[in-house]
Amino acid sequence: MQGVFVSYRRQDSQSAAGRLSDHLRDHLAGAAIFRDVETIEPGADFVDAIDRALKSCAVLLAVIGPRWLSISDEEGHRRLDLADDYTRLEIATALRRKDVRVIPVLVEGAQMPAPEQLPADLAELARRNAVELSDKRWDYDVGQLVNTLRKLTGLPEPAPPPMPKPEPGAAPTRRRWWIGATIGILVLAAILADEEGVFDPDPFVPTPAAPDAYYPPPQTSGETTAPSAGLPMLSGMWHDTQGGRFELVQQGNQLYFQGAGPEGYVVGSARLEGYHGQGSHTLNGYLLQSAFVVSTDGSRIDVTVVDPANGQRHAAVLLRQ
Image (cartoon, rainbow, N blue to C red; front, side):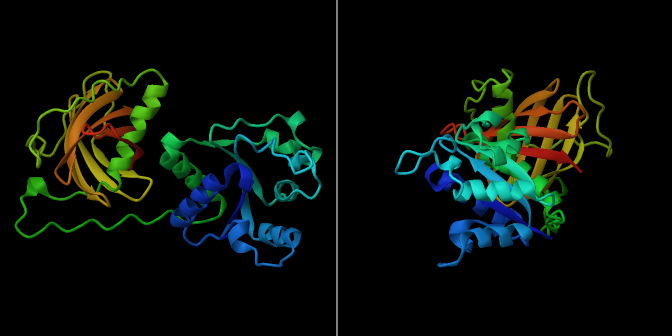
């Protein structure tokens, strides 16, 4: 099991790097996260510390903000051109090591630098596939990065939480299913679809509903109704990237779902229109609305949840079990 080295410029992306490091510690338990301000002891040789850290790391994340290329020292020299620039030393050292994966991470709208903009020992960085972390999709973008880092560092997938036992006397149709972090999951679809010109935020208009509204699926013999032509089949168990689990029941173009997770208990329904859909649900009795996009192979649902009271959105991804 190996660690992750987070390289960044303090004058450029210190806040984003700190936020990223905190997220990695929360979701990569067991992997060492190296970030200079926290892990280098006072008086230690910085170059030696970098070399030692990289020997125990499988990945270096080069966090690049909008000023990463242009920041200069007090004499007006571009810091990246200085041989003793710490950021340059970190990345150049990692690029020379064949056992370290170097991943550019673009934050705050930064663009990937071209080879001619970089010193010779960093030119190879321009050929590395970059990851973009945007503010409006932060949780999803970092979640995708965490999945990659989990593989590179040899960390096992997190175990899903145990299914809760039904409460004594609870009606079978109201049993609690785990849906884990559903509020975050139901946000991404709208954001993605909006960028592709598919999602329309206007349908999110508050509709009257009882505070404890419940949407039970129709009683059946245990079989779900086959969907109409042109619709994906979504019935079954699903999970999110944070270990949550939930179940969907589909009848034609109508979906019903219910479950429970870190945010509380969720129950609702939605209507499919091809591979897109909209619906409403309650979280601990609080009414929310959602839109989602289903992947062409039916294995993934990108969802957006909107609070009709304030317009706040949350995004996440559901994956078929």
